[in-house]
Amino acid sequence: MNSIVPVILSGGSGTRLWPLSREHYPKQLLALSGNLTMLQETAMRLNGTAQQEAAIVVCNEEHRFLVAEQLRQIDRVPQDILLEPFGRNTAPALTLAAQAVSARDSSAVMLVMPADHVIRNQAAFYAAVQKGRDEALEGRLVTFGIVPTKPETGYGYIRKGSSLTSDGVYKVGSFVEKPDLATAQAYLVSGEYLWNSGIFMMSAKRWLDEISRFRPDIANHCMSAWNGRKRDMDFTRINTEAFSQCPSESIDYAVMEKTDNAVVIPLDASWSDIGAWSSLWEVSAHDSEGNVVQGDVMLDQTRNALLIAQHRFLGAVGLQDIIVVETADAVLVAHKNKAQDVKAIVQRLKETKRSEHISHRKVYRPWGTYEGVDAGERFQVKRITVNPGAALSLQMHHHRAEHWIVVKGTARVTRGDEVFLLTENQSTYIPLGIRHRLENPGTTPLEMIEVQSGGYLGEDDIVRFEDRYNRESEQ
Image (cartoon, rainbow, N blue to C red; front, side, top):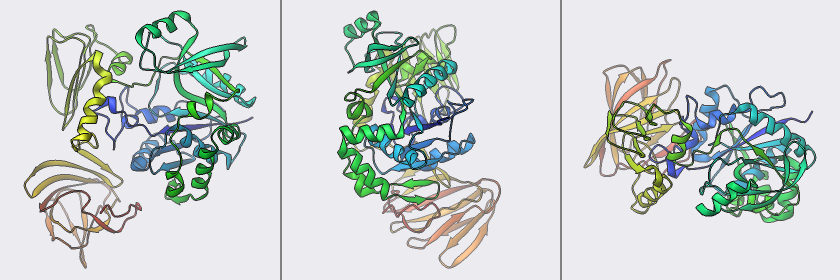
């Protein structure tokens, strides 16, 4: 029996979910609708199906350690994690994944899923996947169209063509761009249109044949990038130079709109891509006044609001249809009807060269985390947590010196030719230009305060000499 290989595409940035979603920690890595992150929910979506194999994950190189750690937390070891040095949209990402699947079994059926969707009705999803598997084994390229529940203007649509089976498989009539409201209402009334989910099924061989037929440029560049791959710890790095020449294109545009073998299966499974804060409000549990609340929040005379407080107490009085999202370094206030326009704020942050769209105050590294505590002219203070057994790179700085104070745990410090231990309430000084390394030799997290001083304190003032995580110098 042909297996199903989940292919998880984890390359999105989720700008409309700022300030929780950032470039270095995008929405698929967040737990927005439950205890698990969206990536983890996606990885567990086929639980209980007999044909499931371990997943292939395609992700941004910047997110590789976060992706690997989140999969480890739920005991889902992937077949491979393919690293894109930069985004080229979904068609190249799927082509790389198909190369990885085909290297083991070209007849295997791929279930292609974005990492940032929510599906509440698992039984309905399983049933649709089984239909899709049968069609994929017949050589068809399957997409799943979401049965619409409202006249949505934020999604593309798929028009159903002729019926192929009695149990709900249709030829793809056409793919339709995001409509205006009047057109969306007409689509809903007609019953002929489905939301474009971005979920697909096909065999690895069929996809490689079709992409070679319709977009040989993408196929050839991806083949060169795949052939030039290198193994790096738990990851596969493709050839950067070859991939840089690959055009950016979606699965729809590259193949699905051109092939005669595309079919669509309606999916009615309480699906959402949580593409904006209003979508999260829709799929979440509401109180008696229609509010969705997370964190330390107190309300009065407030209805149909989404209120998230991560670090501080949040009070709301006399509000309706409002979104408030509080993080350590940013607060968003928006009307629900304008949720799609949050990306405009992100664009302005980019244009003004601010950093709030890139990372949170707490920054994740493969060895642990650091968080900004205070900063001023020629100094900044960070709270650093190093995981048990982990180590920062052997490095030096041209422009800053550092003071380290251990708050909890044990630190092994390399400073020039010295190697020594520090325990709670002990400290040391790292002069400018001295090679140094911080390690946690213990079995509990190491927590420390770092005070940096100097004329330039940017993260790019790091020269790495040795690094167990194979990161290159950031300078």
